[in-house]
Length: 569
Ligand code: ATP
Ligand code: MG
Image 1 (cartoon, rainbow, N blue to C red):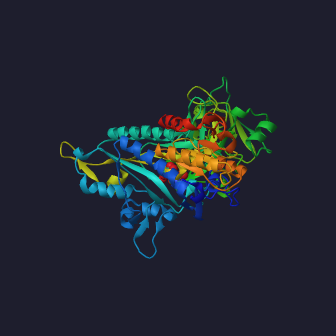
Image 2 (image 1 turned 60 degrees about the vertical axis):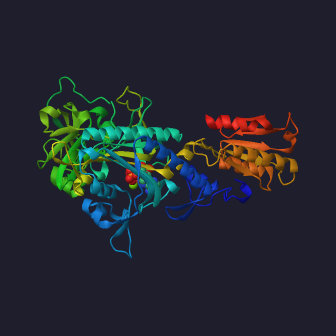
Image 3 (image 1 turned 90 degrees about the vertical axis):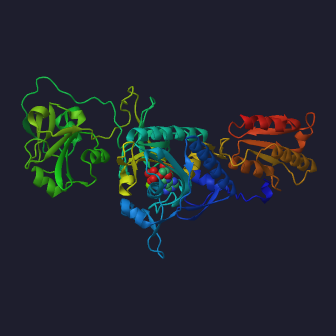
């Protein structure tokens, strides 16, 4: 492609509020342009990259027995009403105003199930893996970070259908392996976390995450390979345990203790012996949760323990009414009213504890939870902290932000039951089909690749995703017949040998061309200048590796073979 006539509008700088490297570089390298909040137009070189990603997705999905579909983005809302998701999705779903009853699909579980049900009725028709690469529409409340979170974006979504949970496990594992191959081929470093299932319902799920300061998810990871969303992460911190000869509990005055640190600093209480009590209203009922004094309660863990998200902290007057004291003096013994008490695993059967006495300005010491308190259950309620030993080999945990790149999900029978998608087994018995769903964001793949492959000069494309194989740069091409002729010949030879070349044949300064080439970031640059054309047998050019910055001279006659060898590797 001759750059003089190619639409690749590069920019020295971006004036928009782009913050992420990938967002800035996509704008600067002329890959895409914004049209409205969360809506982007792909320019030719950006679209080429997207298509390369889609090709890899297709190849790997096809290898894994995937069958490609193309489902409409315009959907009748009735189908979505049947699963209750038109309501559950709320404002995220776009509704068409002048054609009542049509919505824009944010994902396709319902439509897949609808079509599968039409012709799949026997165990003989299963298993199936269906996929598509298609636009999704989501009215994201805060679209930002460029194409990472768009209102219209491409997703590779896949759905598996099986006769049993055991077989679903096989499809799920196959998709997990497929995803790993896809991300590896695209040169993206990722880690996998088990995630909470959220509002989708069903069994297990895993997310493929990319570590990134701008990521909206928080994960705990370690060098041993431990990785989990902070919502479910655990560590190997030891429980508080028991001390010997712990006497009866007794009350003591703590008029100046509002916080755990006050207790430690002003009343000489050992930090590990402090227990704090938090009162929540869960499904309308007060529950006290007892934790180590300086631990942080994890709302997601609480939601899964109580299997509801209808949870709020008790207000000040409620606290007083329920416990007899204000925050800071609340504890598990002698509460004003009988309420359920749960405790964190780290406090299991602990003794020698200090906690509020449910009288303002007073605490109990020497509490023995198994002797003195009525703990309904011990559960994991705490958020892990940086530096804690992991559960694999004790390596210290790091807490990182991460971007979700892909998601695999055991749906179970939620959609097949709601849409009456059943099959007959060998004995003529009917069962709902057991389903899975698997998604990858195509633009996110591109953005994550750029996040991981760039430097202060621009993008540093990996070979598999680069919009062109190499950049041919003619220096002073408008002034030198020699340079023009040599470039034209190299360009044609490479093209004939199947290489995709971006040829900078523009009338522009040398410095400008170099800067532009580094910004666009193709893996190799061939620099053709007058001086070197006189070197060697038939003349030489300079070959620069964009990633390492290394340059070497190469004879004109060797260029084609050199690149053929590279492209075959
Ligand atoms: P997020 O938590 O980031 O909103 P999600 O849980 O809504 O993601 P899924 O519904 O599981 O995402 O979609 C599958 C994949 O589609 C995601 O892993 C992500 O790569 C991509 N994706 C989701 N929402 C967007 C978006 N608004 N823009 C671009 N890609 C997206
Ligand atoms: Mg989302």
